[in-house]
Length: 244
Image (cartoon, rainbow, N blue to C red):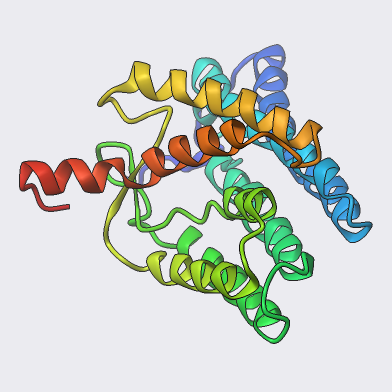
């Protein structure tokens, strides 16, 4: 006898299914926000764009716990929350930031469209890699956080050559098998990680609200926390002698 397919799963009350579908709509709302962010980017309203991307980031942080709490996968087995999440994340983490990076005027002009294309291609490949997350809640390789990369580009405004080289290195690191912590799910130092993310969010809101015209201490705090998130696992493994 064949195993029951999704259509053969037990039915749940309409109210339960409606609440579960509401979580999918909440996730999909991130796609609409990505559109608004893109419109702001086209107008070169960079701070507004990052504000909308920040809202999308908040939705991305909340929809997973909501889906698990309401058991959305069991209630609506014909709808893939994972696929929906990847579609929206590609827009907010990769596509809109790639446009902003390309159109920013902060890179070598000839390199900007090449880097933008490389970001989109590497991001798409990363999102389709079944090994992108490890069993201990780390990302494998640079985790396509191009919204963060764009944020730091606008915050620091490095020389065009430096910015272009750093972005090219990040594209390459997408395919390098090193671990990057998930700041909310990695169990090691989880309380510290969450506290640092709260501080980062406050500093980021200050930076966006001031159109990136911020004191040195704000930039330094954002860079320190960003460096910790990106490199702490690598440093811990080097010190302890463990391999990725």
